[in-house]
Amino acid sequence: MTVPILDLRRSFKDIKPEVFDALERIFENQSFILGSDVSNFERHCEKYLELPEGSAVGCASGTDALLLALMTADVKEGDEVITTPFTFFATSGTVARLGAKPVFVDVDPKTYNINLEQAVSKINKNTKIFLPVHLFGQMCALEEVKEIFNDKGVKIIEDAAQAFGSSRIVDKEIERAGTVGDIGCYSFFPTKNLGGCGDGGMVVTKDLKTAERLKKLRVHGSGTTYYHEEVGINSRLDAIQAAILDIKLKYLEQWNEERIKIADYYKLLFKASGLRDFITPPEVLDGNRHIYHQYVVRVHSDSNPNLRDELMNYLNENGCAVRVYYPLSLHLQPCFKYLGYKEGDFLVSEKLTREVLALPIFPGLQQKEQEEIIETMIKFFKR
Image 1 (cartoon, rainbow, N blue to C red):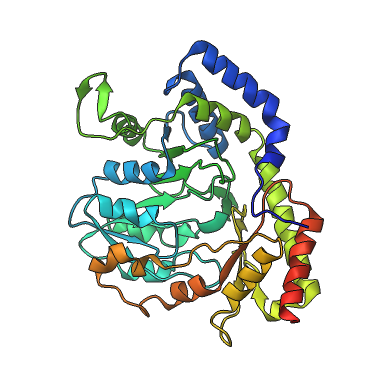
Image 2 (image 1 turned 90 degrees about the vertical axis):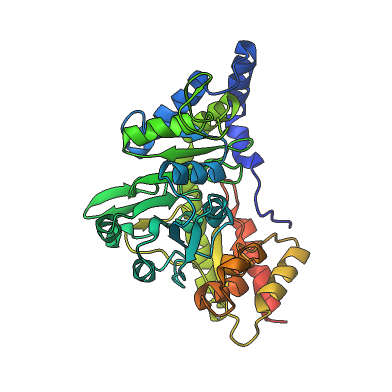
């Protein structure tokens, strides 16, 4: 049996007629950039996220969502942004692009999210932004530090690129990823839980004045055509992506629940297989609704630092596709050498890069395919 790391075709077949109808309508109208399809999707996202009307701003990618958020917060050269080294490059790449300094903080070994206590310890007079990442679909417990950052005048920009639909119970209330801080950023890359058929992103904020500025910045800083109040960027969500995403949004809860059930079955399989001696499944923080954008386990490396790679190669060679997110901590990336970090500065992040392994998880994944993955792992460890 061959098990793919991802198969988008399985969920697409259920919505294919709706998508093709929407595409036909758009091509008949020949209206492709922004317009009613984008505004309708923005309104539906606001309703889903329980945000005020006018607070969601579609843009061209998750990377641009981060860039627009930082621009709206007036991040500039000399500013510092506290963030995590264990995430996708765009989180800190957008900070550096504006001339600001990424200040890295190590991560929690169980959730892989940023260590909040250490993040607070890094606040100084140059700190402009706290940029946490809700990694792999699980929220950070931002309620623990939100007031501290607010009191210090530090804005919180949430990188929720992998967490649209993730939530957390705080004081018996639901907090949704991307809506806790000052600004939230999402990606609609095709592989995301809510993914389009190309690039796309969104920025959200409860401050409607900030939202209006975001809308201007995404069209070259223009409030009125050809009149530019400031220098922005070209980052417009197109109508085709918005229409497809709007259809998929209706199915998101169903698909996320399916991911959670798949994760639960993995947990049962690991418990029954005896593999827990070699592998630690992902842990869910109390109060969290983990939506499993990725299902990332840890392969114990203390006795063999190459064990993860050996297991990955064995699985891939035997038809079970797996991936590593992420193989090199950001503080060790060549382009960030100028920051002065070195190996050993963030031990947890560095250890994770040697141990993490993402298993297939997507709507339509079958239990027999999960069983095949676990059985192949058992064969590897029994060699």
